[in-house]
Image (cartoon, rainbow, N blue to C red; front, side, top):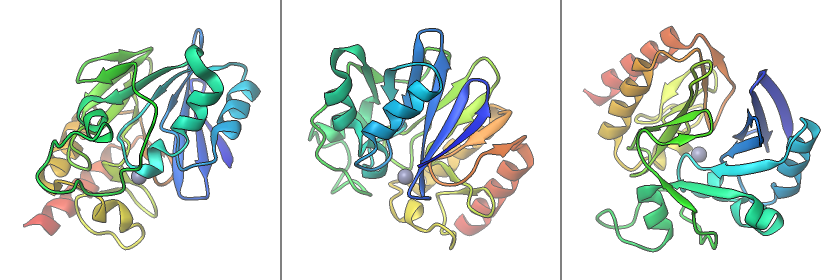
Length: 228
Ligand SMILES: [Zn+2]
């Protein structure tokens, strides 16, 4: 696990050098955005305590295995003291409901934990605003910190080497594209997130990008070329 303080409200927790979760500071403790793969529960609790608080909420960008992996173990540890928030459509897929034709793309593990809240566009999670950004998964959401316009964009973008949209193959990290459900919708979501004019871009896979406007523009242009 490696911990990077992004700004006063945000800590990036990276596991296995390939997947990130985020601790977002609030008055009552932390919101953990995503949980990476299995085996991370103790590390997340320790990281939050090390930064001076407890995990009060767990909010997911989407339901893929590399983002929900430590959810059940965290819920077991934290019990009723933690609220779990999962995007509406992805919660329904995890619940075994059929929301797309055929098998949904990417890995959808069995998750015992039921969400307390099913997230939709415009909901608030502490200081974070929920931004619906479907495509990578049917229910994918991003989180915009309303205090400083930091954007946690989940798997709409990756940032290894440079920022890329997951709607097209990029050799540094092809896995995210293979797992993408609807590439057209994913690219549309990338444009929507760019339009938020974020001050920093945080993603599920790759390092933080400050002042990401130009990098997001270039990523969207490359994705558009690949799609045409
Ligand atoms: Zn991912």
